[in-house]
Length: 130
Image 1: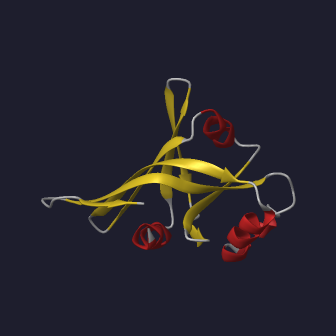
Image 2: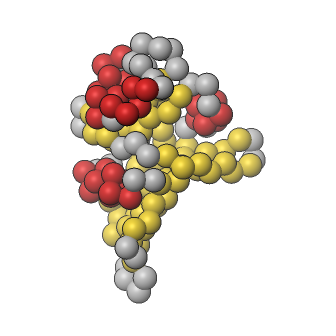
């Protein structure tokens, strides 16, 4: 899990895919944070991604850097505790310009049932489950 988090931080921008009905939706994200032994990402409740994950928590994350890419299949589960949101915002203080842990919009999700696959051309993938 730590390797996945560090890779997502290194790339800076990764892509999160969710489903809206039968239509895949992909958008850029940029948060990755370990809190209480779990990998977390952050979004806003007003966004479509929040509504999509509330209906179907299955998601995939994809990131690429220097010939190595990550595909992370998982479920994203909301953690509605202020302490979890505060931890994320403390790790990403620039987000405090638009979010607050008590604003009713800031939302954090932890990764559950994850299968992370690291790929590089010509090599067998490295699989990490957590």
